[in-house]
Length: 164
Image (cartoon, rainbow, N blue to C red):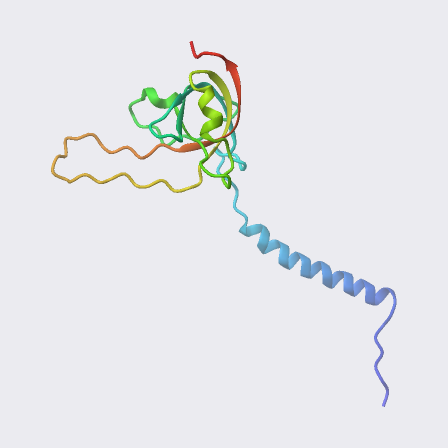
């Protein structure tokens, strides 16, 4: 009985390379199809730079950036309604409340209240609670507005000592 021997040399190495390429392509192609791209109006990194006046909010960790304007691409806004509101240039800012959160704390933001600042912000990822639903007895009331997007302040720079 004659034993079969495997070819050695260039023939075997060419087959191994070809098999490896086929295997790599068959794995990479489906993985590339599964990737989803960020919407066109929102950058992948979700970081924005704004200038405006820093004001206190309703809670100890809430602040507002008023008279704000974007440097570069502005943060995405909800679908605009037919009526233009005066709050378009206001951004709700959320100070961090624990060491594990990324961003600036209230202690760092409080001294800047009332001053014009340049801020780098990113959307708060935590889900906001749904607004309470009123009883359906009075339909003449104005529609309930969705809660505004809150942003965490990553860094800031004072531009002026006042907002005037």
